[in-house]
Image (cartoon, rainbow, N blue to C red):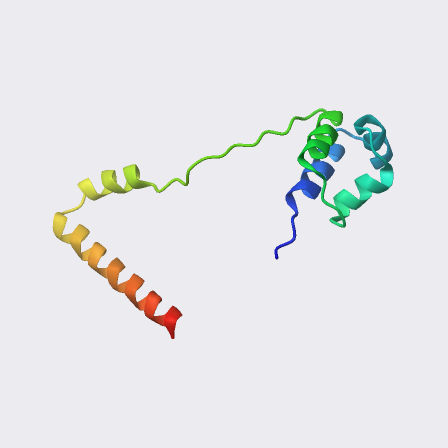
Length: 108
């Protein structure tokens, strides 16, 4: 399992940009200096509420966004209009072969 690093980096970056010590951030954020140290070192991960509270204490706000992946379809279609259809078809065929080869390699 991958180690979570976002919250530790956010806390440390916010604290440093605010010019605060771990103790100052802990007091302003309603927690302890050892907790802030554990969050920044990655030994512990804060809850979303705790993360938001610490960032707010440093003068920042936590914003999260859920968005669908950008497939770049509109840019691809616009680019394809600039090329002769024979080149577009050739590219699609090469890409299909690449995918099929990749799938065969994975199964081996």
